[in-house]
Image 1 (tube, rainbow, N blue to C red):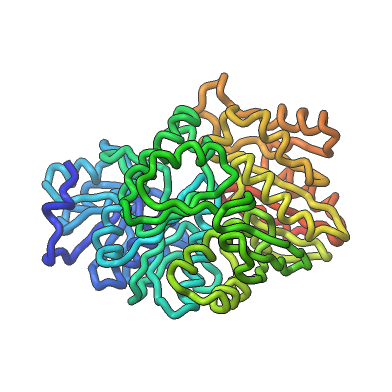
Image 2: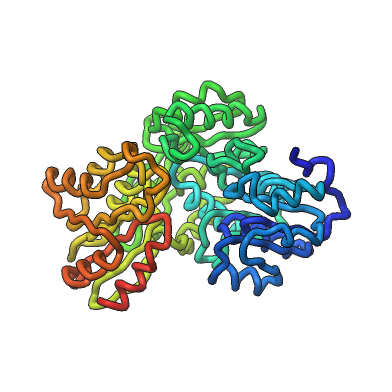
Length: 473
């Protein structure tokens, strides 16, 4: 049984986090430390930069999971969602009768309590939208708190403890913990929420699209009467769920009649200027260094929330211009021989397509070389085998890596990189299959030309391919 509700009180001083080196858990550990708690953590993969970052914050990290890590009887143990019930630390927590909880529960109790939660949900765009929102509120002097799944360049951090009234968080549809097998977004009670999209993803926990839609539908049905939901207006999966809401709904996007609409768009790299209409009337003009229509939609949802918070359009505009982006989202890692290497987190076929579409205008004088590693539980399955073939149409040269690990996936469900390359060639694309990262690096270094942009897409480290490409170019 989860004991947080009746065991946490003012006496809590020591908190241990199991699986502390994940992005979210690491941020939570730092927030708890900044709040004055004595914090320890453990993980089976303890290595820089996360390990050194946590240690610099005064957080003692244990390498590996064992009962001794919690033998000092911390007042609370936060258990990450990668941990199973047979983990030795979990078993010791149960034997000792220690209080424990999940990451969202800890965030609610220690960080979000007493604040208005602003939540961003959806299959795509959560990190970028949350990051823009955090920066806009910060620049408006609202001093927000936030925890986000990416490093904001403006803050050089993925978390912040502010003194303002708002807490910004990603509403992740992934499950919470072994003892709480529901999406994380069920744990938050947002004052305002954004839903950017609803598509099938996370094949390791969802059976199909209907399973995903049911989760989002239950989330929307649970929003309180006085909450506000900003919903993207051109997602049919999302549109079909809005009838379950009892809260206020405002749509944003490109459709006529939506309260918030994008107007004229002008691209002059590195800037994109765009107009926004509110209730069919001109609202204001904005400028951003983010590229791509999907990022303009992310910014539009933030503009809508900011307006509801009475932030002047001029302040929103200034913040959008000074927003520096997020690491691993269209992040330029370097340039050699006039060849640019860019890193992006894209892995879902929709994200791959939109990312390529967004950066293509930056390649007027050269080619767009797309390098893709299918690494997620979904992308290593054949679920989107055909859809991926349609995601690379705007790339000039395509390099597809063999999935790094498919041992746990049944043979008849495995994604085939070779088949993807065959399908791409049938569409007239220059596509190549590679068994490993070294082979990709050798090929790209030999074929890249001045003015080319190398777009590397993976949700993992990809064997440090970005720096290795720069070192070898």
